[in-house]
Image 1 (spheres, rainbow, N blue to C red):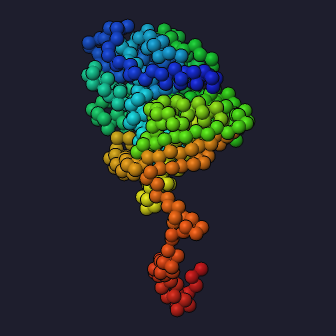
Image 2: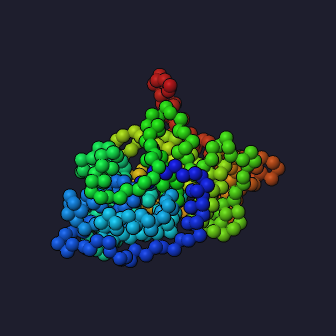
Image 3: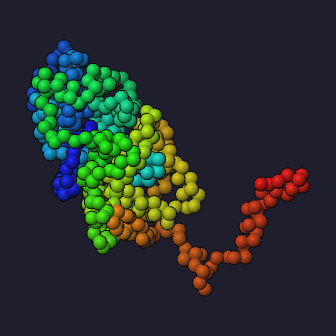
Length: 444
Protein backbone atom coordinates (compact mmCIF):
# COMPACT_ATOMS: atom_id res chain seq x y z
CA UNK A 1 0.00 0.00 0.00
CA UNK A 2 1.98 2.99 -1.26
CA UNK A 3 1.04 6.63 -1.00
CA UNK A 4 2.65 9.83 -2.21
CA UNK A 5 2.83 12.91 -0.02
CA UNK A 6 4.67 16.19 0.44
CA UNK A 7 2.95 17.04 3.71
CA UNK A 8 4.72 19.28 6.20
CA UNK A 9 6.40 18.06 9.36
CA UNK A 10 3.77 19.73 11.50
CA UNK A 11 0.88 18.00 9.74
CA UNK A 12 2.62 14.65 10.07
CA UNK A 13 3.18 15.16 13.77
CA UNK A 14 -0.44 16.25 14.21
CA UNK A 15 -1.63 13.11 12.45
CA UNK A 16 0.67 10.98 14.61
CA UNK A 17 -0.52 12.71 17.76
CA UNK A 18 -4.15 12.12 16.85
CA UNK A 19 -3.46 8.47 16.08
CA UNK A 20 -1.59 8.17 19.37
CA UNK A 21 -4.74 8.98 21.33
CA UNK A 22 -6.93 6.40 19.61
CA UNK A 23 -5.58 2.91 19.17
CA UNK A 24 -8.83 0.94 19.22
CA UNK A 25 -8.95 -1.54 16.35
CA UNK A 26 -11.42 -0.76 13.60
CA UNK A 27 -13.84 -3.59 13.07
CA UNK A 28 -13.46 -5.62 9.91
CA UNK A 29 -17.16 -6.49 10.08
CA UNK A 30 -19.11 -6.33 6.82
CA UNK A 31 -20.30 -2.84 5.89
CA UNK A 32 -23.12 -1.85 3.58
CA UNK A 33 -22.31 -2.93 0.05
CA UNK A 34 -21.99 -0.43 -2.78
CA UNK A 35 -22.19 -3.15 -5.42
CA UNK A 36 -24.00 -6.42 -4.93
CA UNK A 37 -21.82 -9.50 -5.23
CA UNK A 38 -22.39 -11.57 -8.37
CA UNK A 39 -22.90 -15.14 -7.14
CA UNK A 40 -21.68 -16.48 -10.46
CA UNK A 41 -18.24 -14.92 -9.97
CA UNK A 42 -15.36 -15.83 -7.69
CA UNK A 43 -14.04 -13.31 -5.17
CA UNK A 44 -10.67 -11.60 -4.83
CA UNK A 45 -9.44 -9.72 -1.75
CA UNK A 46 -7.32 -6.70 -2.71
CA UNK A 47 -4.73 -4.86 -0.60
CA UNK A 48 -6.03 -1.33 -1.20
CA UNK A 49 -4.42 2.04 -0.47
CA UNK A 50 -6.77 4.33 -2.36
CA UNK A 51 -4.05 5.51 -4.73
CA UNK A 52 -4.09 5.43 -8.51
CA UNK A 53 -2.82 1.88 -8.98
CA UNK A 54 -5.07 0.12 -6.50
CA UNK A 55 -8.10 2.20 -7.55
CA UNK A 56 -7.62 0.97 -11.09
CA UNK A 57 -7.03 -2.54 -9.73
CA UNK A 58 -10.61 -2.72 -8.46
CA UNK A 59 -12.15 -1.98 -11.85
CA UNK A 60 -9.52 -4.02 -13.74
CA UNK A 61 -10.14 -7.09 -11.57
CA UNK A 62 -13.86 -6.73 -12.21
CA UNK A 63 -13.73 -6.15 -15.95
CA UNK A 64 -10.68 -8.15 -17.02
CA UNK A 65 -10.69 -10.98 -14.48
CA UNK A 66 -14.49 -10.98 -13.92
CA UNK A 67 -14.21 -11.15 -10.14
CA UNK A 68 -16.05 -9.71 -7.15
CA UNK A 69 -13.59 -7.43 -5.35
CA UNK A 70 -13.28 -6.96 -1.59
CA UNK A 71 -10.89 -4.15 -0.65
CA UNK A 72 -8.80 -4.13 2.53
CA UNK A 73 -7.28 -0.91 3.90
CA UNK A 74 -4.70 -1.21 6.65
CA UNK A 75 -4.17 1.52 9.28
CA UNK A 76 -0.47 1.29 10.12
CA UNK A 77 0.15 4.86 11.20
CA UNK A 78 0.73 6.16 7.69
CA UNK A 79 -0.01 9.71 6.56
CA UNK A 80 -3.58 10.01 5.29
CA UNK A 81 -6.44 12.47 5.13
CA UNK A 82 -8.98 9.95 6.41
CA UNK A 83 -9.47 6.25 5.79
CA UNK A 84 -13.26 6.52 5.62
CA UNK A 85 -12.93 8.57 2.43
CA UNK A 86 -10.65 5.88 0.97
CA UNK A 87 -13.23 3.24 1.87
CA UNK A 88 -16.02 5.19 0.16
CA UNK A 89 -13.86 5.54 -2.95
CA UNK A 90 -13.37 1.77 -3.07
CA UNK A 91 -17.12 1.16 -2.78
CA UNK A 92 -17.88 3.80 -5.41
CA UNK A 93 -15.34 2.20 -7.76
CA UNK A 94 -17.20 -1.10 -7.53
CA UNK A 95 -15.84 -3.09 -4.61
CA UNK A 96 -18.55 -5.23 -3.00
CA UNK A 97 -17.07 -4.36 0.37
CA UNK A 98 -14.18 -2.47 1.96
CA UNK A 99 -12.65 -3.33 5.32
CA UNK A 100 -10.66 -0.79 7.30
CA UNK A 101 -8.45 -2.67 9.75
CA UNK A 102 -6.48 -0.86 12.46
CA UNK A 103 -3.26 -2.88 12.51
CA UNK A 104 -1.13 -0.58 14.65
CA UNK A 105 -1.18 -2.52 17.91
CA UNK A 106 -0.64 -5.83 16.11
CA UNK A 107 2.13 -4.22 14.08
CA UNK A 108 3.89 -3.12 17.26
CA UNK A 109 3.32 -6.29 19.29
CA UNK A 110 4.14 -8.81 16.55
CA UNK A 111 6.49 -7.03 14.16
CA UNK A 112 8.25 -4.18 15.94
CA UNK A 113 8.85 -6.11 19.17
CA UNK A 114 10.61 -8.85 17.20
CA UNK A 115 12.47 -6.31 15.07
CA UNK A 116 13.83 -4.47 18.10
CA UNK A 117 14.95 -7.73 19.74
CA UNK A 118 16.95 -8.40 16.56
CA UNK A 119 18.19 -4.77 16.20
CA UNK A 120 16.88 -5.22 12.68
CA UNK A 121 18.95 -3.29 10.14
CA UNK A 122 19.06 -4.62 6.59
CA UNK A 123 22.61 -4.28 5.27
CA UNK A 124 23.43 -2.78 8.67
CA UNK A 125 21.55 0.43 7.81
CA UNK A 126 17.83 0.14 7.03
CA UNK A 127 15.32 -0.58 9.84
CA UNK A 128 12.90 -2.46 7.55
CA UNK A 129 9.75 -0.34 7.74
CA UNK A 130 8.04 -1.73 4.59
CA UNK A 131 9.23 -5.30 5.05
CA UNK A 132 7.86 -5.36 8.60
CA UNK A 133 4.35 -4.24 7.64
CA UNK A 134 3.73 -6.69 4.78
CA UNK A 135 3.27 -9.81 6.97
CA UNK A 136 0.69 -7.97 9.11
CA UNK A 137 -1.23 -6.85 6.02
CA UNK A 138 -0.96 -10.35 4.54
CA UNK A 139 -2.49 -11.90 7.65
CA UNK A 140 -5.49 -9.58 7.31
CA UNK A 141 -5.84 -10.36 3.60
CA UNK A 142 -5.85 -14.11 4.24
CA UNK A 143 -8.25 -13.81 7.20
CA UNK A 144 -10.73 -11.77 5.16
CA UNK A 145 -10.31 -14.07 2.15
CA UNK A 146 -11.41 -16.93 4.40
CA UNK A 147 -14.45 -14.92 5.53
CA UNK A 148 -15.58 -14.56 1.93
CA UNK A 149 -14.43 -18.00 0.74
CA UNK A 150 -12.35 -16.05 -1.76
CA UNK A 151 -10.14 -17.95 -4.17
CA UNK A 152 -7.81 -15.03 -4.87
CA UNK A 153 -5.76 -12.34 -3.16
CA UNK A 154 -4.41 -9.35 -5.10
CA UNK A 155 -1.88 -6.58 -4.54
CA UNK A 156 -0.78 -3.45 -6.40
CA UNK A 157 2.97 -4.09 -6.44
CA UNK A 158 5.15 -3.73 -9.52
CA UNK A 159 7.30 -6.49 -10.98
CA UNK A 160 10.54 -4.76 -9.97
CA UNK A 161 10.06 -4.23 -6.26
CA UNK A 162 10.50 -6.24 -3.09
CA UNK A 163 6.92 -6.05 -1.87
CA UNK A 164 5.52 -8.39 -4.49
CA UNK A 165 7.79 -11.12 -3.09
CA UNK A 166 6.88 -10.32 0.51
CA UNK A 167 3.14 -10.39 -0.06
CA UNK A 168 3.20 -13.53 -2.14
CA UNK A 169 5.62 -15.38 0.13
CA UNK A 170 3.56 -14.55 3.23
CA UNK A 171 0.28 -15.48 1.58
CA UNK A 172 1.70 -18.75 0.30
CA UNK A 173 2.93 -19.69 3.77
CA UNK A 174 -0.34 -18.70 5.45
CA UNK A 175 -2.60 -20.44 2.91
CA UNK A 176 -0.97 -22.16 -0.08
CA UNK A 177 -4.38 -22.72 -1.71
CA UNK A 178 -4.97 -19.02 -2.34
CA UNK A 179 -4.04 -17.75 -5.79
CA UNK A 180 -2.34 -14.37 -6.11
CA UNK A 181 -3.10 -11.83 -8.81
CA UNK A 182 -0.70 -8.95 -9.47
CA UNK A 183 -2.51 -6.60 -11.89
CA UNK A 184 0.38 -4.14 -12.25
CA UNK A 185 2.57 -6.98 -13.55
CA UNK A 186 -0.10 -8.02 -16.05
CA UNK A 187 -1.83 -4.97 -17.42
CA UNK A 188 -0.71 -3.04 -20.46
CA UNK A 189 -0.18 0.36 -18.84
CA UNK A 190 3.43 1.53 -18.82
CA UNK A 191 3.05 5.08 -17.53
CA UNK A 192 0.95 7.02 -15.03
CA UNK A 193 -0.77 9.05 -17.81
CA UNK A 194 -1.86 5.78 -19.44
CA UNK A 195 -3.33 4.65 -16.14
CA UNK A 196 -5.14 7.99 -15.73
CA UNK A 197 -6.56 7.73 -19.25
CA UNK A 198 -7.86 4.20 -18.60
CA UNK A 199 -9.34 5.28 -15.26
CA UNK A 200 -11.21 8.16 -16.88
CA UNK A 201 -12.53 5.92 -19.67
CA UNK A 202 -13.82 3.38 -17.14
CA UNK A 203 -15.29 5.83 -14.64
CA UNK A 204 -12.69 5.25 -11.95
CA UNK A 205 -12.42 8.09 -9.47
CA UNK A 206 -8.77 8.63 -8.58
CA UNK A 207 -7.37 10.87 -5.84
CA UNK A 208 -6.87 14.50 -6.88
CA UNK A 209 -3.73 15.11 -4.86
CA UNK A 210 -0.88 17.45 -5.74
CA UNK A 211 1.44 15.72 -8.18
CA UNK A 212 4.58 14.37 -6.57
CA UNK A 213 7.62 12.93 -8.32
CA UNK A 214 8.31 10.61 -5.39
CA UNK A 215 7.07 7.16 -4.48
CA UNK A 216 6.47 6.97 -0.74
CA UNK A 217 5.61 4.12 1.60
CA UNK A 218 5.09 4.98 5.24
CA UNK A 219 3.86 3.70 8.55
CA UNK A 220 4.48 4.54 12.20
CA UNK A 221 8.03 3.06 11.93
CA UNK A 222 8.98 5.68 9.31
CA UNK A 223 8.89 6.68 5.64
CA UNK A 224 10.56 5.27 2.52
CA UNK A 225 11.10 7.72 -0.35
CA UNK A 226 12.30 6.95 -3.87
CA UNK A 227 11.97 8.03 -7.55
CA UNK A 228 12.24 11.49 -9.10
CA UNK A 229 15.54 13.29 -8.59
CA UNK A 230 16.59 10.53 -6.14
CA UNK A 231 17.09 8.07 -9.01
CA UNK A 232 20.48 9.69 -9.62
CA UNK A 233 22.51 8.55 -6.58
CA UNK A 234 24.80 11.60 -6.94
CA UNK A 235 21.96 14.08 -6.35
CA UNK A 236 21.59 15.36 -2.82
CA UNK A 237 18.07 14.65 -1.49
CA UNK A 238 16.01 17.85 -1.55
CA UNK A 239 14.40 19.04 1.67
CA UNK A 240 10.89 18.60 0.30
CA UNK A 241 11.10 14.79 0.59
CA UNK A 242 11.14 14.96 4.38
CA UNK A 243 8.07 15.36 6.61
CA UNK A 244 9.09 13.67 9.90
CA UNK A 245 12.43 15.39 10.44
CA UNK A 246 13.63 18.97 10.32
CA UNK A 247 16.90 19.79 8.62
CA UNK A 248 19.79 19.30 11.07
CA UNK A 249 20.86 22.86 10.30
CA UNK A 250 17.45 24.09 11.48
CA UNK A 251 17.35 21.88 14.58
CA UNK A 252 17.55 23.48 18.07
CA UNK A 253 20.91 24.84 19.18
CA UNK A 254 20.63 23.05 22.53
CA UNK A 255 20.63 19.26 22.89
CA UNK A 256 17.60 17.27 24.01
CA UNK A 257 18.06 14.47 26.54
CA UNK A 258 15.64 11.55 26.72
CA UNK A 259 15.59 8.44 28.89
CA UNK A 260 14.06 5.21 27.59
CA UNK A 261 13.23 2.38 29.97
CA UNK A 262 13.09 -1.20 28.72
CA UNK A 263 11.51 -4.25 30.32
CA UNK A 264 12.68 -7.56 28.84
CA UNK A 265 13.77 -5.71 25.71
CA UNK A 266 10.52 -3.79 25.16
CA UNK A 267 10.29 -0.01 25.68
CA UNK A 268 7.93 0.66 28.59
CA UNK A 269 8.60 4.26 29.76
CA UNK A 270 9.89 7.56 28.42
CA UNK A 271 11.47 10.08 30.77
CA UNK A 272 10.13 8.14 33.79
CA UNK A 273 6.58 8.16 32.41
CA UNK A 274 5.12 4.66 31.80
CA UNK A 275 3.93 4.40 28.20
CA UNK A 276 3.04 1.73 25.70
CA UNK A 277 5.58 0.79 23.04
CA UNK A 278 3.24 2.33 20.44
CA UNK A 279 3.02 5.66 22.27
CA UNK A 280 6.79 5.70 22.78
CA UNK A 281 7.28 5.33 19.02
CA UNK A 282 5.01 8.31 18.35
CA UNK A 283 6.72 10.39 21.03
CA UNK A 284 10.24 9.55 19.83
CA UNK A 285 9.31 10.31 16.23
CA UNK A 286 8.53 13.84 17.43
CA UNK A 287 11.53 14.21 19.77
CA UNK A 288 14.14 12.79 17.41
CA UNK A 289 12.59 14.28 14.29
CA UNK A 290 12.46 17.78 15.78
CA UNK A 291 16.21 17.47 16.42
CA UNK A 292 16.93 16.53 12.81
CA UNK A 293 17.69 12.87 13.58
CA UNK A 294 16.49 9.87 11.62
CA UNK A 295 17.42 10.39 7.96
CA UNK A 296 19.06 7.70 5.82
CA UNK A 297 20.36 7.90 2.25
CA UNK A 298 21.60 4.57 0.93
CA UNK A 299 22.09 2.42 -2.15
CA UNK A 300 20.22 -0.75 -1.29
CA UNK A 301 20.44 -4.23 -2.78
CA UNK A 302 16.90 -5.30 -3.62
CA UNK A 303 15.89 -8.93 -3.50
CA UNK A 304 15.17 -8.93 -7.25
CA UNK A 305 18.81 -8.08 -7.99
CA UNK A 306 18.54 -4.33 -8.62
CA UNK A 307 20.54 -1.70 -6.74
CA UNK A 308 18.17 1.06 -5.70
CA UNK A 309 18.84 4.46 -4.17
CA UNK A 310 16.53 4.79 -1.17
CA UNK A 311 15.96 7.59 1.31
CA UNK A 312 14.34 6.93 4.66
CA UNK A 313 13.05 8.88 7.64
CA UNK A 314 12.96 6.68 10.73
CA UNK A 315 13.66 8.81 13.80
CA UNK A 316 12.05 6.61 16.47
CA UNK A 317 13.21 3.35 14.87
CA UNK A 318 16.86 4.38 14.68
CA UNK A 319 16.85 5.91 18.17
CA UNK A 320 15.26 2.82 19.74
CA UNK A 321 17.70 0.47 18.04
CA UNK A 322 20.61 2.62 19.22
CA UNK A 323 19.33 2.54 22.80
CA UNK A 324 18.52 -1.18 22.67
CA UNK A 325 22.02 -2.03 21.44
CA UNK A 326 23.53 -0.02 24.29
CA UNK A 327 21.49 -1.92 26.87
CA UNK A 328 22.48 -5.25 25.32
CA UNK A 329 26.16 -4.27 25.50
CA UNK A 330 25.64 -3.76 29.24
CA UNK A 331 23.56 -6.86 29.99
CA UNK A 332 24.35 -9.66 27.53
CA UNK A 333 27.16 -12.11 28.25
CA UNK A 334 30.05 -11.72 25.81
CA UNK A 335 29.62 -14.93 23.83
CA UNK A 336 25.86 -14.43 23.55
CA UNK A 337 26.39 -10.90 22.25
CA UNK A 338 29.02 -12.08 19.75
CA UNK A 339 26.78 -14.90 18.51
CA UNK A 340 23.82 -12.53 18.22
CA UNK A 341 25.48 -10.04 15.88
CA UNK A 342 25.60 -12.25 12.73
CA UNK A 343 22.17 -13.69 13.57
CA UNK A 344 20.76 -10.15 13.58
CA UNK A 345 21.99 -9.82 10.01
CA UNK A 346 20.34 -13.14 9.12
CA UNK A 347 17.09 -12.04 10.76
CA UNK A 348 16.97 -8.73 8.88
CA UNK A 349 17.82 -10.39 5.58
CA UNK A 350 15.16 -13.08 6.03
CA UNK A 351 12.49 -10.46 6.76
CA UNK A 352 13.64 -8.23 3.90
CA UNK A 353 13.32 -11.26 1.60
CA UNK A 354 9.73 -11.90 2.73
CA UNK A 355 10.48 -14.94 4.90
CA UNK A 356 8.47 -13.76 7.92
CA UNK A 357 6.60 -17.05 8.34
CA UNK A 358 9.56 -19.25 7.39
CA UNK A 359 11.11 -21.85 9.73
CA UNK A 360 14.43 -19.96 9.65
CA UNK A 361 12.84 -16.75 10.88
CA UNK A 362 10.92 -18.67 13.56
CA UNK A 363 14.12 -20.26 14.85
CA UNK A 364 15.91 -16.91 14.87
CA UNK A 365 12.99 -15.38 16.80
CA UNK A 366 13.38 -18.03 19.48
CA UNK A 367 17.05 -17.14 19.92
CA UNK A 368 16.34 -13.40 19.99
CA UNK A 369 13.54 -13.80 22.53
CA UNK A 370 15.80 -15.81 24.84
CA UNK A 371 18.38 -13.01 24.85
CA UNK A 372 15.79 -10.46 26.00
CA UNK A 373 14.84 -12.16 29.29
CA UNK A 374 17.15 -10.01 31.42
CA UNK A 375 17.25 -6.97 29.16
CA UNK A 376 15.67 -4.46 31.53
CA UNK A 377 17.07 -1.04 32.32
CA UNK A 378 17.32 2.60 31.31
CA UNK A 379 19.26 4.23 28.47
CA UNK A 380 19.84 7.99 28.21
CA UNK A 381 20.01 9.51 24.71
CA UNK A 382 21.27 12.91 23.64
CA UNK A 383 19.79 14.37 20.43
CA UNK A 384 21.62 17.26 18.82
CA UNK A 385 21.43 18.59 15.25
CA UNK A 386 20.92 15.30 13.43
CA UNK A 387 22.78 13.06 15.88
CA UNK A 388 21.70 10.60 18.53
CA UNK A 389 24.29 9.58 21.12
CA UNK A 390 24.00 7.14 23.99
CA UNK A 391 25.29 9.04 27.04
CA UNK A 392 24.16 6.76 29.85
CA UNK A 393 22.86 3.30 30.65
CA UNK A 394 21.95 1.38 33.82
CA UNK A 395 20.35 -1.95 34.68
CA UNK A 396 19.78 -4.27 37.62
CA UNK A 397 21.02 -7.00 35.26
CA UNK A 398 24.19 -5.17 34.29
CA UNK A 399 27.26 -7.37 33.84
CA UNK A 400 29.55 -4.38 34.16
CA UNK A 401 31.64 -4.58 37.34
CA UNK A 402 33.31 -1.39 38.51
CA UNK A 403 35.69 -3.38 40.70
CA UNK A 404 36.88 -5.41 37.69
CA UNK A 405 36.98 -2.51 35.24
CA UNK A 406 38.59 0.24 37.32
CA UNK A 407 42.29 1.04 37.43
CA UNK A 408 42.16 2.74 40.82
CA UNK A 409 42.95 1.17 44.20
CA UNK A 410 39.62 -0.69 44.36
CA UNK A 411 40.69 -2.84 41.39
CA UNK A 412 39.82 -6.50 42.13
CA UNK A 413 41.05 -8.01 38.85
CA UNK A 414 43.64 -10.79 39.31
CA UNK A 415 46.55 -9.48 37.23
CA UNK A 416 48.68 -12.51 38.12
CA UNK A 417 46.29 -14.77 36.21
CA UNK A 418 47.07 -12.98 32.94
CA UNK A 419 50.33 -14.77 32.13
CA UNK A 420 48.81 -18.25 32.29
CA UNK A 421 45.79 -17.05 30.34
CA UNK A 422 48.03 -15.66 27.58
CA UNK A 423 50.15 -18.83 27.46
CA UNK A 424 47.10 -21.05 26.92
CA UNK A 425 45.41 -18.64 24.51
CA UNK A 426 48.38 -18.49 22.14
CA UNK A 427 49.61 -22.08 22.64
CA UNK A 428 48.35 -23.62 19.38
CA UNK A 429 49.52 -20.68 17.28
CA UNK A 430 52.89 -20.68 19.04
CA UNK A 431 53.41 -24.37 18.16
CA UNK A 432 52.39 -23.66 14.56
CA UNK A 433 54.91 -20.80 14.34
CA UNK A 434 57.71 -22.95 15.83
CA UNK A 435 56.98 -25.68 13.25
CA UNK A 436 57.09 -23.21 10.34
CA UNK A 437 60.40 -21.74 11.54
CA UNK A 438 61.93 -25.22 12.01
CA UNK A 439 61.20 -25.94 8.33
CA UNK A 440 62.59 -22.59 7.20
CA UNK A 441 59.14 -21.35 6.11
CA UNK A 442 58.17 -17.76 6.59
CA UNK A 443 55.12 -17.06 8.70
CA UNK A 444 54.46 -13.85 6.73
